[in-house]
Length: 289
Ligand SMILES: [Zn+2]
Image 1 (tube, rainbow, N blue to C red):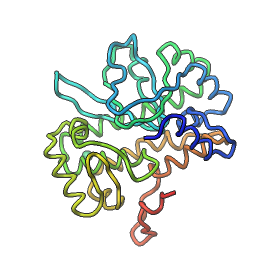
Image 2: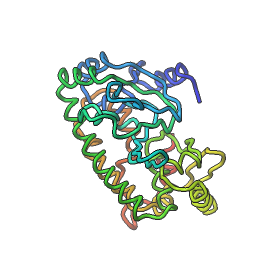
Image 3: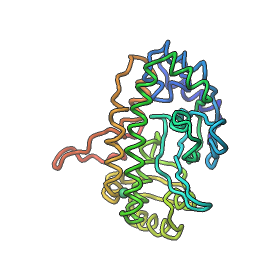
Image 4: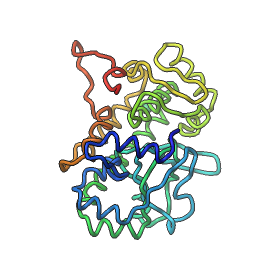
């Protein structure tokens, strides 16, 4: 994985204005007009997160809000010492941690870094101040919470009723939606933890997807070859998760570089499904750069 400076250089090269900040890489913050975004940035600290990092793991006193800008963060519901289930995945489109601060009742979900990358973070006090200073942030937060609540319910239903192979395809799609290319890193071991199932079940499902030629999956390295086939292999939860996110992704945006970057990154997540007989060009080709 490239270092932070290399990432920054790459972002600068991609920017028409020459400079892209981490908050602009986060599409939610990128929806704020520049002056308001800078006000929120005032309370933020840029960090690099590594896969496997546990965030907000202690108490509500240390709860923070996280705005991914390259990182992927899974929200984990826990019960007992070993029982765990990922109930949501958040990338550059949103934020995590706000519920723990707003409800004041302690951390109800563990935050686990699924994919390494940059993020902006702010503590509870900074978050409250930012909400006070920038009312538009509260509207975006409500849209994020709406999406999160819908996803929690969907994931509970998924875990109870859907078969492991469909759930594996669903989570690979959720990850692909939030990845700029077609390659990402996700071990069978971590995927089995996220789905709350045996590793052998994940390996069997992943092996079947690979045998069909829809993905390659070696030592945690996933390459999506046929996105549409993966969508057909998934349960309907992926489509439902997209629908839940739509109000946030379609929230009004100012005209600045952050929105352009966010729009490109998120096009995959809100792209309408083609109608039968329509343009069936493989998605894998459509979003290559
Ligand atoms: Zn499902």
